[in-house]
Image (cartoon, rainbow, N blue to C red; front, side, top):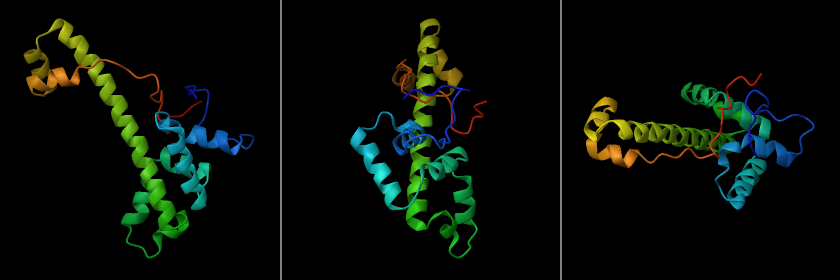
Length: 157
C-alpha cells in the first residue's frame, strides 16, 4: 500500500477495517513476508495492543516509552499495557528506525554514485569522511520504491 504524503495519516480512522488499520500502521514492514506481518499483528492482538497505540508510539519515536522506562518508577509499564506490550511496542519502534536507516543509506548511495561519476574515489572518500575502499561499497545507487515516502511523525496536512 502506498503512502500519500500530505494526504493520509498514520492514525487509523474509525471507518477503516482492522486489517486496513494494521496495514497503514505497519507500512514500514512492506518488505516483510505477509506471514511475518501476520505474526506481528497476532502478537500485538494477543498483548491487547491496538493499531492506534502502535501508531502513537511510532509517531513519537518511542519517547514516552523511554521516558517511562528511565523514570525508575515502579510499574511504569502498566500504563502502556504491561511489559509484554512495551517490549512489542519498543521492537516496532526499532523496526521503523531500521527501515529509516536503510532509506537514508539508499539516498547516500545514490549521491555517492553520482559523485563518483565526476570525482575520483579518493576525492569522494575525503569529502564524505570514509575510506576510499568503502566508497565503492557505499555506491550502490538504487532508491527502493518500497521505502516510506514520509516519516510517521511528519505532519500530513
